[in-house]
Image 1 (tube, rainbow over the protein chains, first blue to last red):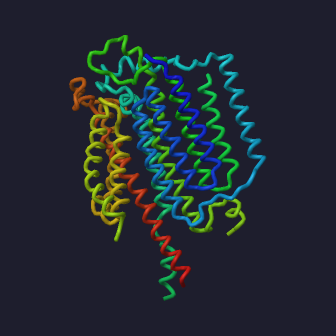
Image 2: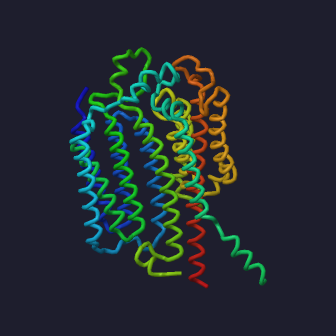
Image 3: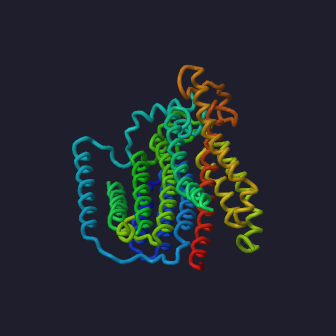
Length: 186
Length: 115
Length: 151
């Protein structure tokens, strides 16, 4: 099997550059399109990493993210972003960067965190070996999310239901209370 | 090793965008970038060198099954992506409501206008 | 004239049926090939969103009404819950009690196929509804803002 590390590094560097453009550009539409480019690169990276399920889902979801973000921002007359510098935020971000790297080094040093390309797979070996005989589903990911761990998927559906319900409540057409108050004096 | 480092860089850039920018759409973009970084990290942890996608084909033996990448992080990330889309719709609708009420996306202007 | 140009409308009419068929394939073969309820549901939602972008909201709502969308959304969630309750017959929540069938066949693997279909209905219709709410809200609030300016 060929080595995928060069392709992965290329895609990751592309994602970092795209994120810098998305963060620092002054035009909101450019920022939205740049973040979408990062998402499409992520989809290709999933394809290289042996996850076609995730790649398909990420690709399709990215299209919807682009449409929703553009729908939300393009209606406005003024999409330019004011320039400002916030040194405190830079310091906070750098502190968190150092903290994450420090914890990562601690775990790598002492606990034997798996290197890239050598996963532990203590639990997953059972799923891989017994997935087809037990559930008769050739796609092991589907057999995990809908058979072994279907309870998680039920929770996920509940979260999606709640967030969509919240969005619909925020975007409700007219306030009913206000309408009633208008009717009464007339 | 360097792959994990680049994931952390991506996460920190999303955090910087979330903390430093005053524009609320930029804050939403920062959250989206952090979500990408975490999803990519989880999938990279489950990658096996020379691995193939965890889909069984007819006539595969035990040795072929040994080459599968880890399916468990993929199952968790699959739900995480769809949840991210629902939460993004919620955040964008909040942004539109705020723009309709205050006429601006700028957080400092919005927090100055009390009431 | 509602919607975009006649070129976009013609292509949209031609392509929408194929997108829906592709989404249905992704859902139905989710346990044999890459894909599944989530990806297929979002693809079907994309077909209706394309219809709404190309033709305007009246045409899209005539294919799938807003009320019907709410009904299908809730029906998908309830169907998934019901599949979990059926598992109680064998002793556990979400126990796969249906017959397994032959390996590598479409009608196999028990409850995974109906669960995929239920999730596809839930994800697809809910995303279509929220996009429709965003689009309709924008049009209405923009008009009301202009009317406020004029009065």
